[in-house]
Image (cartoon, rainbow, N blue to C red; front, side, top):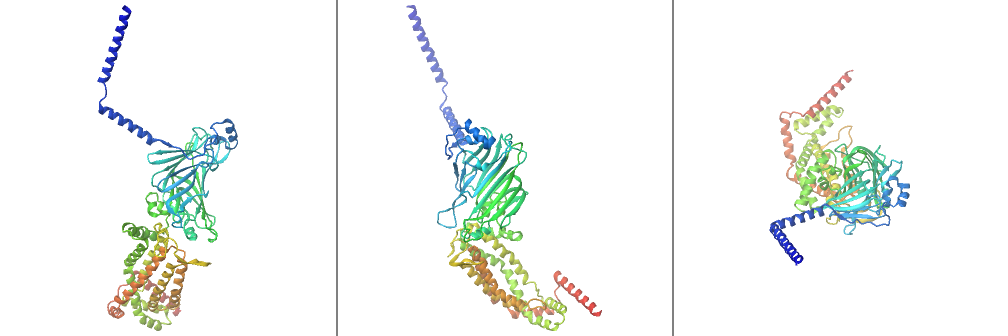
Length: 634
């Protein structure tokens, strides 16, 4: 009986203790707010972990090899030495990893670890509507390799070795790590960082634990080459603007000359650009390359046969060791050679666009580019109409200069009879004739240079336009009237033969521009001949001007036939407007009788004070006259 009583008491005790524990747990139960806070905290931690490292399986071809396989390792060591480990990994076989954003598609190979295909999205080749996208790299036209000098006196090239890919995501950035391994924790790494909606790709190049594998007494040679594909309608036109640009010594820009086997050497190079006409492949580095050897070779010897590639471009860039390791923060740019796009990166990349030097470049940067951008982007005009409005605005701005030039010609024309009379009077004394002619100009208040200066002021704007329109990426594949691409020639007739310096087609805008310049020169040549009498001992300007009336249009016709239609359209409209301005000025603003009366009135006044140039010229002539008189006395 006693044993049963004890067992019952034990049971009762356990029940009481269990009940007490339940009551304590209930009393210490967290509130609903506390539970919600803890739940939110756990979810946040989970999201952060996911964003921090989400591994995406790369596109590779698996193999049966296992890292560390002793037989395979021994075989690989015969050729690869310290890098034999890389040949035993599953990635040691042909395979590729593709990364892309809204701008580019990049395909990176296991073998060599470099980009074997770079495609620009939404940008088509010269056949508009064909669906063929611009590919800056494809079909083995590019190569990136580092020559490795090992501590056991081997010379290896990374292009022949296999990298292990690992693709991860950090936030919205895709990060592809390509590692050439000498061991589990010893490797050479290419790290590609692709951000959303960007042409610029991060490219970190570093080594880890290779100070015993590599010979670190001298830099590694990075060799980069690109055989540039044709992407535009005119291969000769595209080839003309395909070249290597580079920045050195902080902010200086230079380029490699065109032609066969051209070479440049640079120090402290911070970027190397393989620039094509409208697209560029650029390698940038935060730590400048100590030296750079750059080579360019023309591949278009016959544009009827050589129609695939334009140039072979090469760069040799030494990579310096730091504490026995390589560590470079670099970038790749695959995108358009567009001034505004390149300028946004704030790395001087826009300077690879050939806008001209000095004042020509300033006109393009501060007048042409902003004005054309305003017309096309802000107002939204079609590009053909924008060129016409652009030309009208430029010509209106230059009209006061044009007016002064025509006014000066009119004054010289009125004075011509008197100048001719002085020529007859001092026929045997050219020096005296010059002196009297200068006195006549001074009395009449006429500056013989006034007609030349306005024309000289317009020359920089004309030259700037020759640089601006061929470099205007915005015109690419933009149509107007019969021209389907304003950045290339507007062929309306295809010839069954090739004319040297002209081509195998007839472009219409150059024909119209040539006709316009013919009539412009026809209208002005008469006034210029009347205004400027022939000087003794000088060429017959009248004959020269007569020849130029016909030579200039022919030169225009040949020069512009293979150029972009945008430039020809600009010149056509420019000459038309100039003709119109001339007609208006002559009809409504220049009266020969009034000019003659004003000149006669000026003669009665005190002679106008000569300018410094005229005074100096007068002194020179007087000194020459005095020397002549001395010699005559002797």
